[in-house]
Length: 259
Image 1 (cartoon, rainbow, N blue to C red):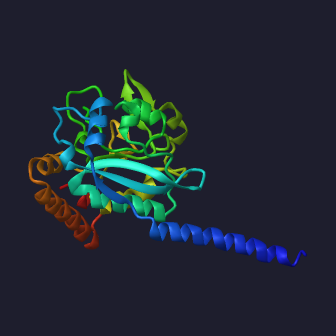
Image 2: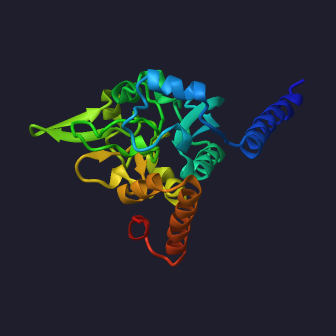
């Protein structure tokens, strides 16, 4: 009987690997318009206002699969982004799936009534949220659907207030040593985001530092919001291609990143 055990274990391992391979190959992110019902929910849950830079007609809902920190596959990922960037954001989450990069969860900000702090504590990955930058009157890039926050616990927000360091969420304190790479930390996937148009990473900032945050430039966001959907998509495609050509020339991400 024992001679069958190695074969059985090998079969189980092969089956698990094949399941992962099939999932990564076949389960692609899906892009859909934001329906009237969903748009209404966004208004009710305070993630969309009538004063924001874009409305529902310019937003896309992306549904995607991902691997959790339990190493199991999950198919309930949802994120809303600007239409111009939707195909590239879908490609980002497909690439994260292929890499088995763990994501804790990805609910729409409706789930948190637009409360960014609540979403961070819940370790939620998200994008669109019609809000200002905390403590200012400046529109966040999230209000354009052109910023993505990834695993806030593993990639915390750090600022200095009254001479003291504040870490948000609090659980993120165990991830302050960025040289000790742990699952879910953003450093291993920066290039995936950059290669798909989100070349500005908050982990490069000096104050505050926002390890979870990926975005485009404010100038590009404003330009995309001010033109038609078709023109915006063409502009974003050009933005991505310029970055890729720059990287192929041997220049660094920092040298290629800002449009």
